[in-house]
Length: 289
Image (cartoon, rainbow, N blue to C red):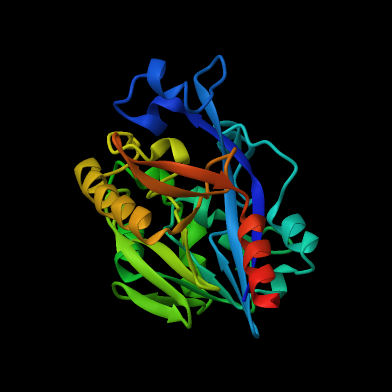
């Protein structure tokens, strides 16, 4: 199994929305913002190559929305989905499977693109099966008024219309060594992948923990539909992650790709942060001995 970081660009979001009830005077010490209170966030995806399978977890915001839409999020950075795949020697046609952690536009927008003459939509990964939880699909296709602006039908419905959608129920093993668990605080049926990689467990954090700064329990996003459920999910997960020495892979933390955690007098906190390559190189060195 090989792992590759797939950067798809960055977007800016209001710091108050991202850190909820935590005051700016506190959160700004852990995560910087600009003069407009906007924090810069990555849209970092993960490619897993295992035999003939090339599995992409999430796919960024895409490029089919209007200029007005994109202007609200101040997209920045030189990375794109296609460019990042190419940097590792792959194309979109190589992808065999896509795991969508949830269907908010910054995670699933890249799943669908314009057709050649912009008269309609087509799936971006024509050779792939798209997978998400049945719970999230039902939630996203019948959205509540609070999340409606994040679930864009053009990002979602063409996947099913083109016959590329496969839904699963609850916690399960999707592929050998790739397990998924369901978390419901951010949005119903959010999928968190757990990857067994050379004796380590790498967890793709999606929006359960958007960044290292979100590790302390009260640091919960205002975007979460059920913040008290998020609080309980975080409490259980971070204790497990510290005990079992999981490697956390962050989709949104612009400054840190991965980290491990440890139990301290103040609760579970960051132990050390590092790039994913450090994990890959370390496991490769051990397997070569």
